[in-house]
Length: 143
Image (tube, rainbow, N blue to C red; front, side, top):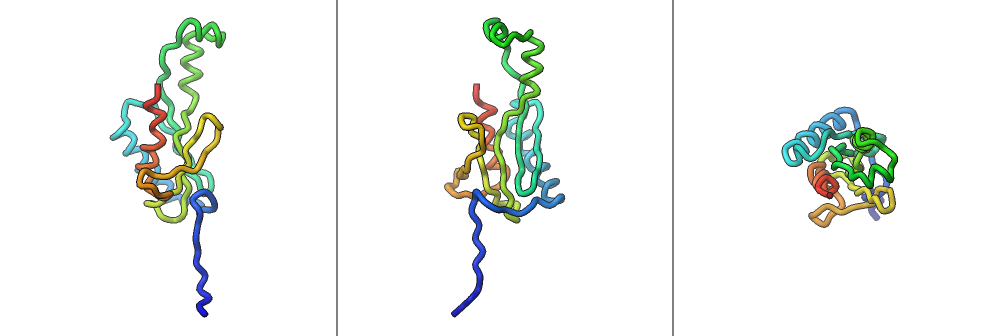
């Protein structure tokens, strides 16, 4: 009988702490891809790491508020615009398993205010950071 242990991982559990060199390469890949494909749709990106996770947020130029909205918030136009410019849009969270081409993906759901497991367009649970950005970037196109 073969007692070889088979290691398996689930897309929504576990992972490997992201090494500094992988963090650096990943940040560069995401930034270059975002600029090339979504340039002008965001003011800046915030790519941060915590343990096994890479979080991608974007900051955008908010639309002009109506006078009714300003009355409801009790803010001036400048206060409103400043607050929204400082509010991140959570695009996605990546989970690292040791392969820079096969990340787990969680999509931020604003209805539940949490990250939820998400499949890539290929139908699988593993994929590259560029495709993950595409999925999260739907929030950049939302009006």
